[in-house]
Image 1 (cartoon, rainbow, N blue to C red):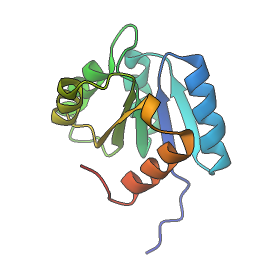
Image 2: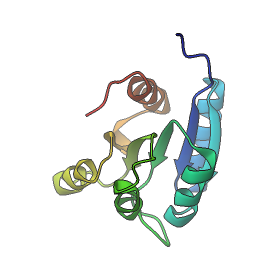
Image 3: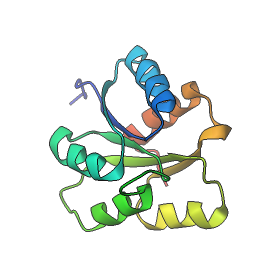
Image 4: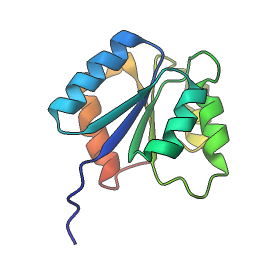
Length: 129
């Protein structure tokens, strides 16, 4: 059976410029978008919005991206894919994010918004880890 639903993306990032840029880009690609500005709000929206994919920053107030991953780790009801989209590019950060359950780890400076959209599409269609 073909998937006909519009993919839902939740962007969890405290940088309004980044959020606005990705909201515009993803809406142009016909994704449904919701946003959260810190990890605590993001966890709440994951439960309520039930996104297909979460774009998750690491460095945020209240609860960082690693904290969000740790909180989701034991949640067997979680079905969303999580892509860390951050400025932290150190190997230990990448390894920690993947170990905590991220499906992909992208350094913001290394990818254009169009490339991020392609990564989201790839994760939605089974390409991860």
